[in-house]
Length: 345
Image (spheres, rainbow, N blue to C red):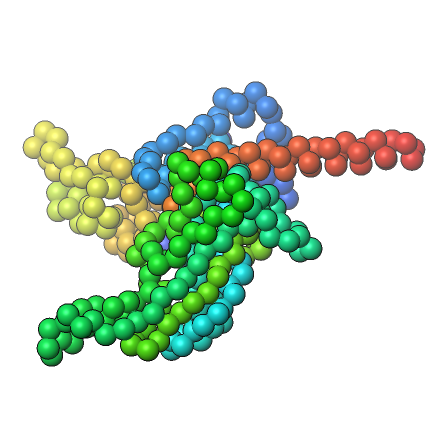
């Protein structure tokens, strides 16, 4: 099998061929492709496609799926954040029961730098170094200034809905000085927690701890972290005329365009990364033998959406640091195992 073909996952009408089935990464069909550091350096690349305040899309090129998936799992489960861990319910006369309300509160993303806090052990007591405290005290009452016959609860009542903006940070120790330039608060102010009606109230104290997503999803710093292989569309034979228009319609907008060359309309692939690999084109007999759909095995399109606690580009950097730390631990363990084996001999 040629190198180019070996590095492609082939998408057919009813199946997918040339998928990886090796016992170790980058080995395909029993061929010798032993890892070489210099070769890896030449082929490895990271390309930033776009970055916003909460999202990043980048291409990870030249690695095996095991590495890409390790990075994805670290993003989801192993980067620490601060989240509400304890809810001390003092009064809750609303319709949402204590347990459900506590769960909703726990899922609120908290804008606090986890590096400024220590890990809290099971036997540790809360301190200003390991705990953030919020207070929630909201009561609903009738708005006497509302118009007669008003039916909108937001106008008829005061505090008819409890939002994340109602959480009040209660600094402990020297926290007020430490976070003077950036006070601790929920990431978003408009997250609905519960609804109240006159005579109902919620009063509680909330304690935030440091944790990671593998302990509970509320600690996960990402809303989504996913990847897909780069699609590749190969036109093996010119597709012209009305067939070119049909060919374009088989793909999402922007993937294929129809150009005119010497008075003939012809289909041309312009941006395959927008393709969803729906295989619609393979349903049409007139394209049989004229098009080949593949995916590049070592080219991963990563999409990461932050919850807003940590900037997306910083999340990727932190995930790579964790991955390198895991590699160091594995290398040290392997070295100890080899040394022990040699001593036994």
